[in-house]
Length: 319
Image (cartoon, rainbow, N blue to C red):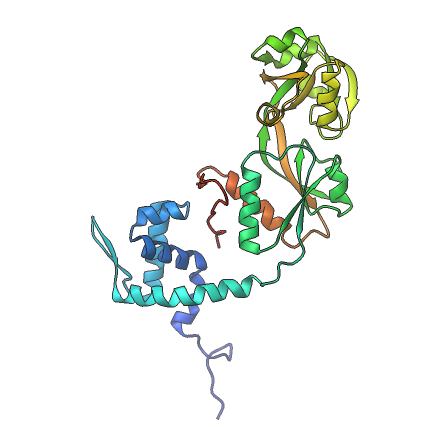
């Protein structure tokens, strides 16, 4: 005799199995964080989350299991016997699950291109976290024309100051930087502590055409006289040192560039340098998008950094 299970002809799913898809690694990681810290506040800080969200995740897990996992009072949090058992099981199972999703092979390195100084802090945080989570090495590649490197698949991801104008490139804006003026030491403006952007129009300037995002529209009503068009920021600085005009470079030069013949003067009221991560639309490294997402999370408001020198620990990607 043929057994029938309803209109679909399929056996009914167990109620708990039907609801299993409602539980994700986010809920399990939330439980483990609280189980380790025995504090919802400390666990939320560890996960760069907030206490209400963490509480909801734990409550959802308890509802799914039909068990109370924690004893909670106004002063103390402790594990119930069911919570102790779940913690022991997850400490064994989760590493195996993560290992299955992260092969031991380091794979093909991710080639990260840049055209001048790497932006402060966040790039190194993103590299460290990406390598820790994926076990794929990041290779830094310096190129004057990183857009061409992406378009020809010589690079997998690149840091672009300005705007991507080539076809076949996907750009994700992640931050912006201020400008500073590059002033020859013998120029009268070198003694100034700050310049207004509009003052540059009264002087001869050097424009970086390859990677500098300054366009004619950035100058306002009055255009300065352009003495020279160069192809990278180093040429811009050296040309200013030679007295060809005033250069414009990102503010990183104030902290990380020393030149005996020029002074870097902060600019007020001008445009900011947009900073984007670019990657090929087709033929990209399989983990290029992962690197971009990690950078976005690190730059998001509320991200907590461990400022201890050396490798910075970062929380796992949300699931």
